[in-house]
Image (tube, rainbow, N blue to C red):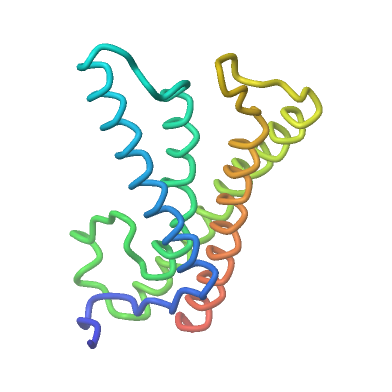
Length: 166
């Protein structure tokens, strides 16, 4: 399948990125199953899944962050190209370089904050109160991992777009 003239060519996602995307899909199905079972069991009279809200919160991190590498590689982020359609291909690539630079700066800051939060959660060894005693560091490290993969993909896309723009 060829790309239209006005689109930037996607980069092929790595096997690891595709695997992370599939893990996110499994997480989405687990989230849906948890919510469905919990709603049905509450309707019957008694919730059968303990800490369901916390489980869904932790799965949400998996569902949102793990596929970011694939989404970035395939250039499937939400975008508005109303003002860039008329630009030449080289100009679109230069804008893509700027986009990647801004993304790298932002994701670097978020990754640094995630790193600090993950270390803090690990040092405290706190758990969410509830029946399952889910450790807080688990979600923090999944978030940090997802951001790290996203940052690496942004760096790769920056190099690709930089080469194509000159």
